[in-house]
Image (cartoon, rainbow, N blue to C red):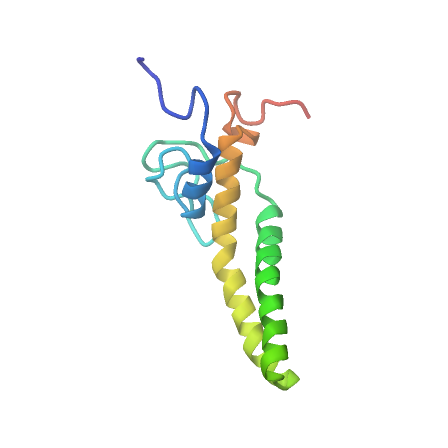
Length: 136
């Protein structure tokens, strides 16, 4: 078909879009970089030209990051307390940096995954209509 671009017309796989987003790549082609900075989304894909300016991740990535890090760190902290009974100061000295590093590393990953899901579901600026062309 002339002018056909995979993922633009027709169905979009949310599984591949999520996987590409989690790897911080363009959800459409999987080759271009999704980020221009730590959590700043690029204006467009350098490979396929997909416009990223319509995405609306907003507060969802920090929420997902906190949810996941908390659900992993708290059971580990409770298990360590049960097994070793370390002093409270040692628990804070060990767990605080671990949780901060985990959140720092996971935030762009969760944002990429959410942008990938937005693209797969044609949400916000990723539909067929022009960005900003919806009802208010």
